Image 1: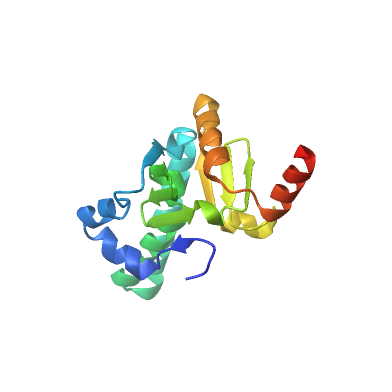
Image 2: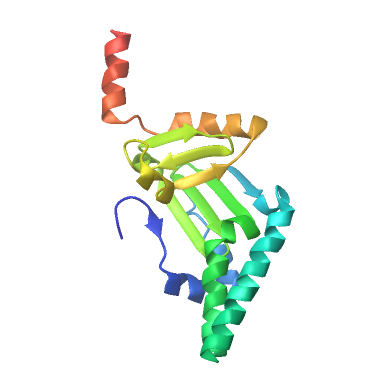
Length: 180
């Protein structure tokens, strides 16, 4: 595992997906880890017409795999891969902020980012992005966790982040200089 965030491999997730109990227990925190805030988001409700397009694309792509390979197993794998690629849009995203870190669960995706590893965060039009990278870059889109929140909920999440996210060394040094 890299030192940025804890991602489970596809095979681990597939095994967990077989059992609803196993999926639910992945988000159980230890007894000492207090849950500060939890919520769920369904991105499909924002643009339902795109859902039809996405589902049609998955259907036709898997049909093309089936017709070209004559192998239903490959077509099934294609469906799983395509669904996992667009899962944040199609399926609910469950978030939980705890004293230890940020948890995110969605279909075949489970992510955890401890507070000490959050090095960069910023507010966007749709929510807050937390990244283990020191600054914004093209890699930031593929690392960390995007928290889809809006309105008053976004301010509550921002307060928790300010409280639990440690300041990076360069920011802490600048803050100390200003306070003197």
